[in-house]
Length: 569
Image 1 (tube, rainbow, N blue to C red):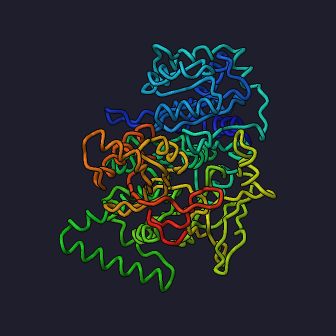
Image 2 (cartoon, rainbow, N blue to C red):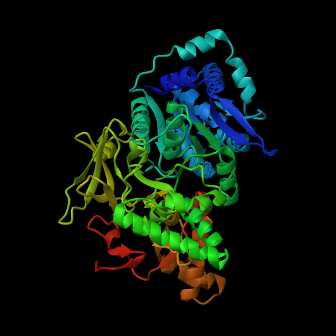
């Protein structure tokens, strides 16, 4: 079904149930029912229609997780317009690029972004209206004002009567921001509706479940699995107050949260917190935890049973996690030991796999048959195969199903490259075991995926670096951060030594390695101010020779690992 039908069914079947809640500063939860959500969406949709938001109009949505974000998303899609969700971490230059490329005419933003958009409008001739998710002001219409306009019966009737087919474009999801190479996956109502049905059908969700919405809603993983999936089954959503571990645990405990979608870094931190608490406990407690873990391990290996569910119940209760039925991990690879340790504690942490281009879920571990190193099995009505596997069975992961995007916006060449014969070629390397479980081994593409699940396109960062006079050439690639050991954005740089020699002479400083490194680091630090924090270069390695290149003058990236050249040119 399309998104409007999904919403109408939720109103009809779950009208009095809580759709979402958020803790107020007083500690009380403010709640919105499904019936209230439907009314808000209808009024907002009709109000946007009065602003000439019609079929196909691009509407940007920017803000933190809240009911108004969900209502804006649902109103835009229900009215046959096209949503353009934006990352709140993007800098102004990145926002301008995406808004220009998408042709966004209207933006619905949180109040903290109203001033930003007031400044940006002079650079965006197509952007004609800004609606605040709260009170209006200079340069923005207020939320209540927009909803009030939508109370007119004729506008509501027109909004709800618009033709909305499954193949209507629903959202444009940009995967990079500041260059002409930016990609925007085009997802239709069929794509989103299929993925919602597929995900709900493969895991034991019920309308009694309470989801914790923690990942930002502009992220396809959260928008689909953390918002549309609960709506499809009448479950409730609790918006987390922050990423602080203490507040997350409090929200889980006080709201009775049973489900949560997260990224590996979040689960690593949660597990580290539990282990710290155990390490600080008396010796007798530490002994019992070690004994219970050994028994749980033995039970799992010998009989395939999870004794941790009973043995660690007091620990889960003390940690505030006793209501949790399952955690879902996606957006980046999860270390097998993290999934295993959660399992031994009696908590199911199910790793899945997918991409923005697949709406996004393509596979997930079955609830009762977890394989810790795997990304699970294909979800219902999705096929996964390995293209041109090598002797070890490793090749490019290809996906087919109604959840696969229809292409990249205004980029037919790239669309034809990744969509071939009904299959989406992911650019990820992986293999399948005899039972059909998926294992992702790396990336064929250059995309860097951080532990927090953020995608960074090296070319986007390189465009900023290449503009610096101190740099002759730069190659951006994943590198290990020495302090944490995590994969971050790194840059191998071949400086412009001639320029730097002249600069040293001008400044009256010795032209040595120390001068070169200082100038390069200062330049990189300055230019990265145009990028979102997660895209900024964290590790810099300087080389004294030009990069090895192909006959078409492209840097041979495959010769580098962790920023060091590992093979001859």
